[in-house]
Picture 1 (cartoon, rainbow, N blue to C red):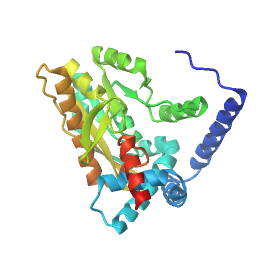
Picture 2 (spheres, rainbow, N blue to C red; picture 1 turned 90 degrees about the vertical axis):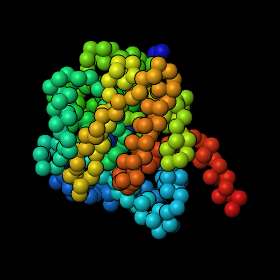
Picture 3 (cartoon, helix red, strand yellow; picture 1 turned 90 degrees about the horizontal axis):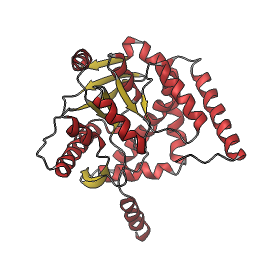
Length: 310
Protein backbone atom coordinates (compact mmCIF):
# COMPACT_ATOMS: atom_id res chain seq x y z
CA UNK A 1 0.00 0.00 0.00
CA UNK A 2 1.38 3.40 -0.99
CA UNK A 3 2.08 5.66 1.96
CA UNK A 4 0.09 8.89 2.00
CA UNK A 5 2.08 11.98 1.10
CA UNK A 6 2.75 14.08 4.21
CA UNK A 7 1.29 17.53 4.55
CA UNK A 8 3.57 20.54 4.20
CA UNK A 9 3.40 21.09 7.96
CA UNK A 10 4.27 17.48 8.69
CA UNK A 11 7.16 17.51 6.24
CA UNK A 12 8.51 20.71 7.81
CA UNK A 13 8.23 19.21 11.31
CA UNK A 14 10.07 16.10 10.14
CA UNK A 15 12.84 18.17 8.58
CA UNK A 16 13.28 20.19 11.78
CA UNK A 17 13.45 16.99 13.85
CA UNK A 18 16.06 15.61 11.47
CA UNK A 19 18.05 18.84 11.68
CA UNK A 20 18.00 18.62 15.49
CA UNK A 21 19.13 14.98 15.38
CA UNK A 22 21.96 15.77 12.95
CA UNK A 23 23.01 18.68 15.17
CA UNK A 24 23.16 16.44 18.24
CA UNK A 25 25.12 13.89 16.22
CA UNK A 26 27.58 16.50 15.03
CA UNK A 27 28.16 17.86 18.54
CA UNK A 28 28.49 14.38 20.06
CA UNK A 29 31.20 13.48 17.58
CA UNK A 30 33.32 16.39 18.80
CA UNK A 31 33.79 14.96 22.30
CA UNK A 32 35.53 11.93 23.83
CA UNK A 33 33.46 8.74 23.79
CA UNK A 34 33.10 8.27 27.54
CA UNK A 35 32.23 11.91 28.04
CA UNK A 36 29.34 11.58 25.57
CA UNK A 37 28.13 8.41 27.29
CA UNK A 38 28.32 10.00 30.75
CA UNK A 39 26.43 13.07 29.57
CA UNK A 40 23.65 10.88 28.17
CA UNK A 41 23.31 9.13 31.54
CA UNK A 42 23.27 12.44 33.40
CA UNK A 43 20.71 13.99 31.05
CA UNK A 44 18.22 11.11 31.01
CA UNK A 45 18.37 10.62 34.77
CA UNK A 46 17.06 14.15 35.07
CA UNK A 47 14.67 14.36 32.12
CA UNK A 48 13.30 10.81 32.11
CA UNK A 49 11.29 11.13 35.35
CA UNK A 50 9.57 14.23 33.92
CA UNK A 51 8.09 12.32 30.98
CA UNK A 52 4.93 10.22 30.73
CA UNK A 53 7.14 7.24 29.90
CA UNK A 54 8.42 7.27 33.47
CA UNK A 55 5.19 5.62 34.61
CA UNK A 56 5.66 2.85 32.03
CA UNK A 57 9.17 2.18 33.34
CA UNK A 58 7.92 2.00 36.92
CA UNK A 59 4.99 -0.26 36.05
CA UNK A 60 7.17 -2.61 34.02
CA UNK A 61 9.63 -2.98 36.88
CA UNK A 62 6.81 -3.64 39.35
CA UNK A 63 5.45 -6.37 37.05
CA UNK A 64 8.86 -7.99 36.68
CA UNK A 65 9.98 -7.63 40.29
CA UNK A 66 6.85 -7.67 42.48
CA UNK A 67 8.86 -8.40 45.64
CA UNK A 68 11.31 -5.53 45.22
CA UNK A 69 11.32 -2.87 47.92
CA UNK A 70 10.51 0.75 47.09
CA UNK A 71 14.17 1.64 47.53
CA UNK A 72 15.25 -1.14 45.15
CA UNK A 73 12.68 -0.04 42.57
CA UNK A 74 13.75 3.59 42.83
CA UNK A 75 17.37 2.58 42.28
CA UNK A 76 16.48 0.39 39.28
CA UNK A 77 14.42 3.19 37.73
CA UNK A 78 17.32 5.62 38.06
CA UNK A 79 19.77 3.12 36.62
CA UNK A 80 17.46 2.29 33.70
CA UNK A 81 17.10 5.96 32.76
CA UNK A 82 20.88 6.36 32.93
CA UNK A 83 21.30 3.34 30.66
CA UNK A 84 18.73 4.68 28.19
CA UNK A 85 20.60 7.98 28.06
CA UNK A 86 23.92 6.30 27.43
CA UNK A 87 22.44 4.20 24.62
CA UNK A 88 20.77 7.21 22.99
CA UNK A 89 23.90 9.34 22.87
CA UNK A 90 26.26 6.48 22.05
CA UNK A 91 24.38 5.60 18.88
CA UNK A 92 25.67 8.59 16.82
CA UNK A 93 29.27 7.69 17.76
CA UNK A 94 28.95 3.90 17.66
CA UNK A 95 31.36 3.63 14.76
CA UNK A 96 34.04 5.18 16.98
CA UNK A 97 33.24 2.69 19.75
CA UNK A 98 33.35 -0.28 17.37
CA UNK A 99 36.64 0.92 15.86
CA UNK A 100 38.35 0.73 19.26
CA UNK A 101 39.16 -2.97 19.93
CA UNK A 102 39.51 -2.31 23.65
CA UNK A 103 35.86 -1.28 23.93
CA UNK A 104 34.14 -4.45 22.70
CA UNK A 105 34.89 -7.92 24.03
CA UNK A 106 33.26 -10.92 22.35
CA UNK A 107 32.60 -14.01 24.45
CA UNK A 108 32.47 -17.24 22.39
CA UNK A 109 33.64 -15.47 19.24
CA UNK A 110 34.56 -18.94 17.94
CA UNK A 111 30.87 -19.61 17.35
CA UNK A 112 30.59 -16.57 15.05
CA UNK A 113 33.76 -17.64 13.26
CA UNK A 114 32.25 -21.09 12.74
CA UNK A 115 29.07 -19.62 11.25
CA UNK A 116 31.12 -17.43 8.91
CA UNK A 117 33.43 -20.29 7.90
CA UNK A 118 30.74 -22.90 7.22
CA UNK A 119 28.14 -20.55 5.77
CA UNK A 120 25.66 -22.11 8.19
CA UNK A 121 22.41 -20.14 8.18
CA UNK A 122 21.10 -19.29 11.64
CA UNK A 123 18.36 -17.12 13.08
CA UNK A 124 20.06 -14.64 15.39
CA UNK A 125 17.82 -13.48 18.23
CA UNK A 126 18.38 -10.90 20.91
CA UNK A 127 16.67 -8.18 22.89
CA UNK A 128 17.13 -4.53 23.71
CA UNK A 129 20.08 -5.09 26.04
CA UNK A 130 22.26 -2.02 26.60
CA UNK A 131 23.72 -0.64 23.34
CA UNK A 132 22.13 -3.40 21.28
CA UNK A 133 23.52 -2.11 17.98
CA UNK A 134 26.95 -3.33 19.10
CA UNK A 135 25.64 -6.86 18.42
CA UNK A 136 24.71 -6.06 14.83
CA UNK A 137 28.16 -4.65 14.20
CA UNK A 138 29.77 -7.72 15.80
CA UNK A 139 27.83 -10.07 13.50
CA UNK A 140 28.80 -8.14 10.38
CA UNK A 141 32.44 -7.71 11.41
CA UNK A 142 32.66 -11.49 11.92
CA UNK A 143 32.18 -11.84 8.16
CA UNK A 144 28.62 -13.18 8.34
CA UNK A 145 26.13 -12.29 5.64
CA UNK A 146 23.03 -11.41 7.59
CA UNK A 147 19.73 -9.66 7.01
CA UNK A 148 19.30 -7.48 10.08
CA UNK A 149 15.77 -6.26 10.71
CA UNK A 150 14.91 -2.86 12.07
CA UNK A 151 11.84 -0.76 12.61
CA UNK A 152 11.92 2.27 10.33
CA UNK A 153 11.43 5.61 12.05
CA UNK A 154 8.17 7.43 11.37
CA UNK A 155 10.24 10.42 10.32
CA UNK A 156 11.88 9.41 7.00
CA UNK A 157 14.60 12.05 7.31
CA UNK A 158 15.65 10.87 10.78
CA UNK A 159 15.44 7.29 9.48
CA UNK A 160 17.89 8.22 6.72
CA UNK A 161 20.25 9.64 9.33
CA UNK A 162 19.96 6.46 11.38
CA UNK A 163 20.87 4.42 8.29
CA UNK A 164 23.91 6.60 7.67
CA UNK A 165 24.99 6.09 11.28
CA UNK A 166 24.69 2.32 10.85
CA UNK A 167 26.62 2.44 7.57
CA UNK A 168 29.54 4.01 9.42
CA UNK A 169 30.05 0.85 11.46
CA UNK A 170 29.43 -1.53 8.59
CA UNK A 171 25.78 -2.59 8.97
CA UNK A 172 24.24 -2.29 5.52
CA UNK A 173 21.74 -5.13 5.18
CA UNK A 174 18.23 -4.30 6.30
CA UNK A 175 14.94 -6.11 5.90
CA UNK A 176 11.86 -3.89 6.12
CA UNK A 177 9.31 -4.78 8.75
CA UNK A 178 5.73 -5.36 7.73
CA UNK A 179 4.10 -7.64 5.20
CA UNK A 180 7.17 -7.91 2.96
CA UNK A 181 9.54 -8.58 5.84
CA UNK A 182 8.74 -12.26 6.35
CA UNK A 183 9.03 -12.99 2.63
CA UNK A 184 12.39 -11.23 2.40
CA UNK A 185 13.75 -13.10 5.42
CA UNK A 186 12.53 -16.41 4.02
CA UNK A 187 14.29 -15.65 0.74
CA UNK A 188 17.49 -14.82 2.64
CA UNK A 189 17.42 -18.10 4.57
CA UNK A 190 16.72 -19.98 1.35
CA UNK A 191 19.89 -18.42 -0.09
CA UNK A 192 21.83 -19.70 2.91
CA UNK A 193 22.10 -16.30 4.59
CA UNK A 194 21.49 -15.56 8.25
CA UNK A 195 18.77 -13.33 9.64
CA UNK A 196 18.70 -11.35 12.88
CA UNK A 197 15.67 -10.19 14.82
CA UNK A 198 14.89 -8.51 18.12
CA UNK A 199 12.36 -10.75 19.86
CA UNK A 200 11.58 -8.97 23.13
CA UNK A 201 8.84 -6.47 22.27
CA UNK A 202 5.07 -6.78 22.34
CA UNK A 203 3.65 -8.25 19.16
CA UNK A 204 -0.13 -7.96 18.96
CA UNK A 205 -1.50 -11.17 17.53
CA UNK A 206 1.64 -13.05 18.50
CA UNK A 207 1.99 -16.20 20.58
CA UNK A 208 0.92 -15.98 24.22
CA UNK A 209 3.78 -16.99 26.52
CA UNK A 210 4.86 -16.05 30.04
CA UNK A 211 7.49 -13.44 30.80
CA UNK A 212 8.20 -12.91 34.49
CA UNK A 213 5.14 -15.06 35.16
CA UNK A 214 2.76 -12.75 33.28
CA UNK A 215 1.37 -13.67 29.87
CA UNK A 216 2.53 -11.49 27.00
CA UNK A 217 2.49 -11.76 23.22
CA UNK A 218 5.66 -12.50 21.31
CA UNK A 219 6.42 -12.55 17.58
CA UNK A 220 6.54 -16.17 16.33
CA UNK A 221 8.75 -15.30 13.35
CA UNK A 222 12.17 -16.44 14.67
CA UNK A 223 10.84 -19.79 15.88
CA UNK A 224 8.83 -20.25 12.69
CA UNK A 225 11.87 -19.55 10.48
CA UNK A 226 14.11 -21.87 12.51
CA UNK A 227 11.63 -24.74 12.26
CA UNK A 228 10.91 -24.19 8.58
CA UNK A 229 14.59 -24.32 7.57
CA UNK A 230 15.83 -26.70 10.25
CA UNK A 231 18.34 -24.18 11.58
CA UNK A 232 19.07 -23.08 15.14
CA UNK A 233 18.13 -19.96 16.98
CA UNK A 234 21.42 -18.24 17.80
CA UNK A 235 20.98 -16.00 20.88
CA UNK A 236 23.24 -13.05 21.58
CA UNK A 237 23.30 -10.38 24.23
CA UNK A 238 25.37 -7.34 25.12
CA UNK A 239 26.49 -6.20 28.54
CA UNK A 240 27.92 -2.88 29.64
CA UNK A 241 31.25 -3.31 31.38
CA UNK A 242 31.86 0.31 32.30
CA UNK A 243 30.95 3.56 30.60
CA UNK A 244 31.12 2.92 26.81
CA UNK A 245 32.79 -0.48 27.05
CA UNK A 246 30.89 -3.67 26.27
CA UNK A 247 30.88 -7.43 26.38
CA UNK A 248 29.02 -9.19 23.54
CA UNK A 249 28.01 -12.73 24.51
CA UNK A 250 27.37 -15.37 21.86
CA UNK A 251 25.23 -17.91 23.70
CA UNK A 252 24.79 -21.59 22.93
CA UNK A 253 22.46 -22.18 19.96
CA UNK A 254 18.89 -23.25 20.65
CA UNK A 255 17.63 -26.16 18.54
CA UNK A 256 13.85 -26.36 18.53
CA UNK A 257 11.98 -29.66 18.62
CA UNK A 258 10.15 -30.42 15.39
CA UNK A 259 7.35 -32.86 16.28
CA UNK A 260 5.28 -32.21 13.18
CA UNK A 261 2.73 -30.16 15.12
CA UNK A 262 3.76 -26.79 13.71
CA UNK A 263 1.65 -24.57 15.97
CA UNK A 264 2.70 -26.42 19.11
CA UNK A 265 6.36 -26.38 18.07
CA UNK A 266 6.31 -22.64 17.38
CA UNK A 267 4.62 -21.98 20.73
CA UNK A 268 7.27 -24.08 22.48
CA UNK A 269 9.97 -22.10 20.66
CA UNK A 270 8.45 -18.80 21.75
CA UNK A 271 8.41 -19.98 25.37
CA UNK A 272 12.11 -20.83 25.13
CA UNK A 273 12.85 -17.41 23.63
CA UNK A 274 10.98 -15.65 26.44
CA UNK A 275 12.82 -17.78 29.01
CA UNK A 276 16.14 -16.72 27.46
CA UNK A 277 15.12 -13.05 27.53
CA UNK A 278 13.93 -13.25 31.13
CA UNK A 279 17.18 -14.86 32.27
CA UNK A 280 19.22 -12.12 30.62
CA UNK A 281 17.03 -9.37 32.09
CA UNK A 282 17.15 -10.82 35.60
CA UNK A 283 20.92 -11.02 35.34
CA UNK A 284 21.31 -7.33 34.45
CA UNK A 285 17.93 -5.61 34.95
CA UNK A 286 19.15 -2.02 34.65
CA UNK A 287 20.38 -2.65 31.11
CA UNK A 288 17.09 -3.68 29.50
CA UNK A 289 14.93 -1.21 27.59
CA UNK A 290 12.09 -0.75 30.10
CA UNK A 291 10.44 2.17 28.32
CA UNK A 292 8.19 0.09 26.05
CA UNK A 293 4.95 -1.63 27.11
CA UNK A 294 5.89 -5.30 26.93
CA UNK A 295 2.72 -6.78 28.39
CA UNK A 296 -0.89 -6.49 27.14
CA UNK A 297 -2.65 -3.15 27.62
CA UNK A 298 -5.15 -4.66 30.05
CA UNK A 299 -2.29 -5.46 32.45
CA UNK A 300 -1.42 -1.77 32.62
CA UNK A 301 -5.07 -0.69 32.86
CA UNK A 302 -5.76 -3.07 35.74
CA UNK A 303 -2.80 -1.67 37.64
CA UNK A 304 -3.91 1.90 36.98
CA UNK A 305 -7.41 1.04 38.21
CA UNK A 306 -6.00 -0.56 41.35
CA UNK A 307 -3.91 2.53 42.09
CA UNK A 308 -6.94 4.79 41.54
CA UNK A 309 -9.05 2.75 43.94
CA UNK A 310 -6.29 2.77 46.50
